[in-house]
Each structure stands twice: as structure tokens, then as C-alpha cells.
Image 1 (cartoon, rainbow, N blue to C red):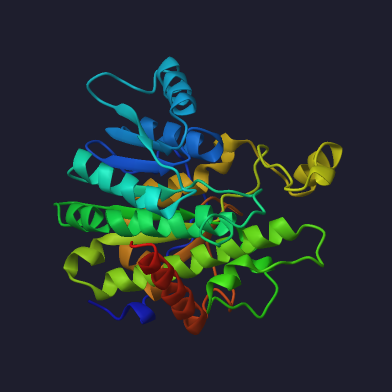
Image 2: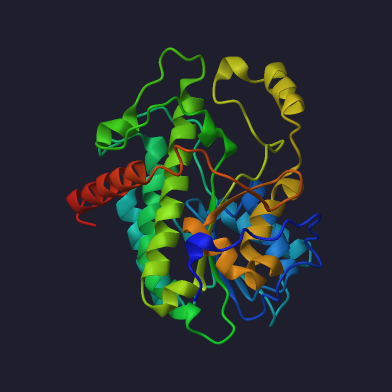
Length: 339
């Protein structure tokens, strides 16, 4: 196997057709967190059109998930005997609950082909029950333990003939706006306050997404270094673009100002915004150029000029010491929780 550090970058693609450029997902099992609304819901739609056999909408609220499933059935996207959509209970507000949710999934399924960590919190400014920013719990720590618990099943699936296992982390271009220097040496670093900024919550959100990008790099490197089954798992982080469902995190910035921001940021409808997530989850190109997408600890994708465009991460996101500090702090925190 060639040295992945020296592997060429993925081929630049000039277009992406969500109907023609996806692998056949027949027989595959997918989890989409936050799959009952917004980009997550539209991602589920496209995966069903690609003939995915079973999709789990991992969400906290059963009622909303059921409404989403009913809507999918009404559109004719769930075909008896061919495709199925199920609700899977997942509350990312508590790492203990996230781990329990993953353990419950392991009892249900014998394979997992794609895990899309899509759910996120942009609004909470609270410090949670464990003394850590709720935003970092929901956006990073709970997805971390949820994914870690599911890894054995993902790696097992990667041993199957013609497997194409992927972990997709939906982050944000906002990660590049985090003021430097950044530290993750202690839990208090997750609670950093940007009080001098008018949108401190937005910057904290960006900080949580930086953590997700660093973790994505760690996870891909870890998988490649593990036994052969890890080589079959591709980790992709991505920015889906700004969608019309986006709301500014401060009440004073909502309403007309929010609409102006959407226009300035060229916000798109969720059915368009989901395309980079769909590319990461099921594009033929990722399958055909697997080693290139796994190179240098995985890649980061954005939506422009076309969905799935490979973009170089910032120096902060590629900082190996920062990555090691983040993982060490995360693991210590989970250990203290008995996880």
C-alpha cells in the first residue's frame, strides 16, 4: 500500500448529480443523526432514492421523527420490501445517553455502512450538568462517544465483500473563524467565553466545529493505523453550505436581519444544501478513490464551487498537538463519566 501521506489529492470533479453519481445503496444500513429535519431530512431523501435498504433517523423526539417518516412515505420514498426508515432514539444532550443509544443500536443491527453525524446545536449558551458547554456536548462530545461505540460494527461491516463504509461529520466553515490561539488542554477550554464579540454563541459554535474537524482527522488516522478492517472506513468532514433554515443565534439578529444575512451568504434550500452530505455518504468518486480521500488523516469538503469540493483545512485544524490535547481531554472526561 502506498504511503498515504504522499498520496495524490482526490480528483477535482466539475459536477455532481445526486441521481447519477451515487453508489447503489441496496442492502446498506445508514444512520443520520438529526435526520428528521433540515439538511438531515433532505439527506435521508436522497439516500432513499439511491435505494438504501434501511435508514435510521436518530433523534430525540419520537413524534417529530414519526412525522418525518410519514412525510417520506407520502412522497413514495419508502417502498415495502425494498426500503425502510426507522426512528432510533438519540439524545446528544448527554454523553451517557449517546453511548446507551449506540449500544442499543448494536443489538438491532449486524451491519452499519454509513454514519452521518449531522445533528447540531447553535443556540445553547448554558453550561450543562457535567460542567461543560452544552454546545460542545451536543456538537462534539456526544457524537464522539456515539461513534466510538459504533466503531466495532462499522469495522466489521468494512470486512464484507465490496464494502464501502463511511463516517460523515457535518461541521461548518465557521470553524475557521475561531480566534487563535486555541487550547483544548482542559474541560474549561470548552467553556471559553467570547464576551467581547456580539455573537459569542456563534463563535463558540465555531469552536465546537473546530473540535469536530480535529476529531475527524484523529479518527481517520486511528483507523488507518489499526488492523485491516480500519482501512475500509473513510472519514469525511464537511461544510454543507448556508441553508434557508439557518437562524442567527441571537434574537436581536433574527427577523429582517436574519433574512439579509441569508441573502448575503447566498443561502440555499435544504434540498440543495444536503448535496455535500450526500456526496460524502454515497458518491461513487469517494469509493473509487478511497485511499486519496483517506490520505493525510482524511479530507474536508465544502459545497462550492460544486458539492464535495476538497478544501485544505486551516493550520489550526491541522495542528497535531492541538488534536492530541483535544482527544486526551475528551477521553479523560468520558473516563470520569464512567464511559
